[in-house]
Length: 220
Image (cartoon, rainbow, N blue to C red):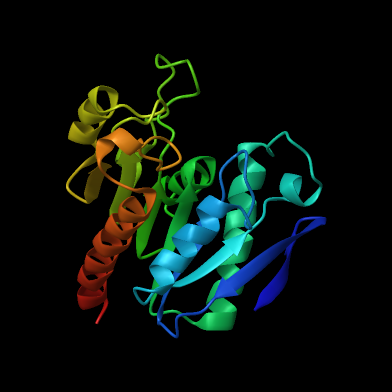
């Protein structure tokens, strides 16, 4: 099912990938992607196979085929608008927000502002801009009170374990960090690792399913 969602004076595309579930994940794409890119679609397929509905969507700059991401207030406004549509259309019992890289960061900033959701699912959180490890994007993270599940690869150049681990000590017990051994920012693993990209996706799916089951038991 596809939607058109109003965001200020713009309209963006969204797609509901149904698993027939009462758990819905509103998933934003990364800076260089869109709702149809392989990374987002693969995550959607993986989660649907484990009983999670997914709503993918574009940001306004993506709809305009611009290579320059919208300012953060617009990214947040778009996420809010798509979440509102998902609530109205699907009436989920458990609602998750998040997404890949930049999209997940926008959702995390919403959550830090107190935006109502049952959980935050972050895929390759960009702890700092490319090549600028001194510019950490962590100031808002301790303000998040919703449960968080964050996946990053141990080869992710935008979020290395040595930079992230001190941040984790400040964010509180609601944050679950899941390191994907050998994966990079795109969740790709090298052949010599002995793993495949499909195995990484399965690991994400299985860990997410377990986490969602815990959230669902609390929501009952």
